[in-house]
Length: 109
Image (cartoon, rainbow, N blue to C red):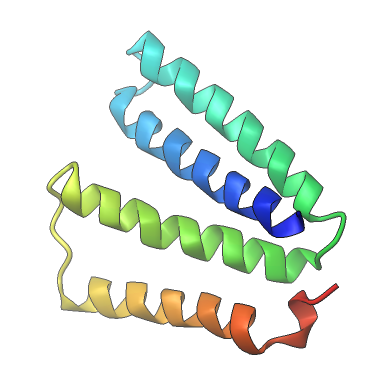
């Protein structure tokens, strides 16, 4: 169940950040409401995750997965360009998240 909370926290954070871009500096009310609700839900589920997993591991996975997903959304939806160093960095973040999940005994509770 703890990993379902973590996945929910990541997804709500990604929705909130995407809506933040669409809110145009909080001038667009629907996107602004989605942003605030998304971050609140993300932090709620993140807090539930912290009941069973170490904060360093949780934060690394939450932020790393969020960065990768937001970068892909920026590229696909907002047509933002990703150059070689950006792709390399995203790949390294993804590799770090995978190493934490697959090999670290710190994330086992």
